[in-house]
Image (tube, rainbow, N blue to C red; front, side, top):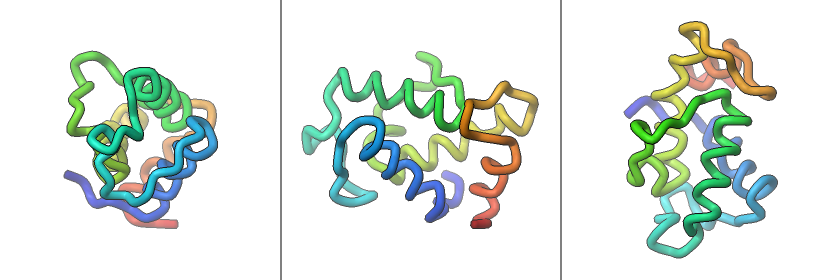
Length: 107
């Protein structure tokens, strides 16, 4: 898995709070096992990840372990941010530069 950066981790936590109305106790908390994420919240999470980070989430890329915790989601975003670096469309709040900064640990 790619290096987890505090800035991206914070943005994912904020997405849960601001967009989903869910408070996550810690970055390592099991979101499914603890009942934080149910099926409807999971679909909303995927939609918000696409919108916020400009990543296309397909059925082929949806593996529950990639979304089991904030750290896992952060790793998924970093691993799939190549779409932006390789000419993907990007979302409304993300630029190629901002995703590259996550991967480098820049703030």
